[in-house]
Length: 162
Image (cartoon, rainbow, N blue to C red; front, side, top):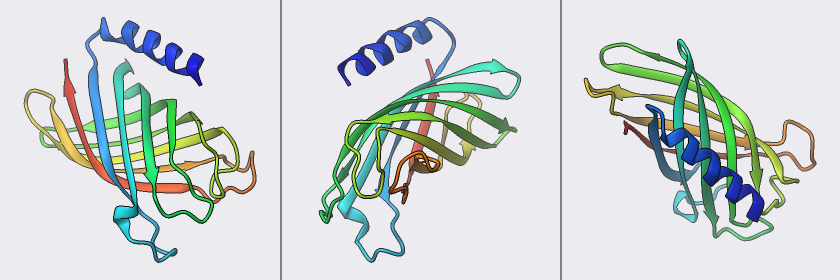
């Protein structure tokens, strides 16, 4: 995990030299069928997003979730890469992202360290390209590991250029 952190920091510093956006996402876990209260699971991530071609973008993320529910579920840190497609008009912004993610602590919902993180975002954007909206994040192994129950998080995402 130490090498993953170093790699993410180095890659992030390369990205800092370009016209990019910082992404900050925080929220609560969404577990509607399990009967747990939302404050038991907290989620946060930061990332650097950059344009690749037209509406295609890439994002490097690092973050954590804190899970106090017990019963085989534990907290974990993660780092990953996502490709995304983003559409923006004068007021609204919508994007979809997907990519591989490494987690530090597999548990009874996520059976191994290699996961995939999908993110859906819907928000508003201002004339300075700042945006704020709702983000849904899903983590699962796409069947590589068992169990593969996945984890879902709903949160507030803020993006701003630097």
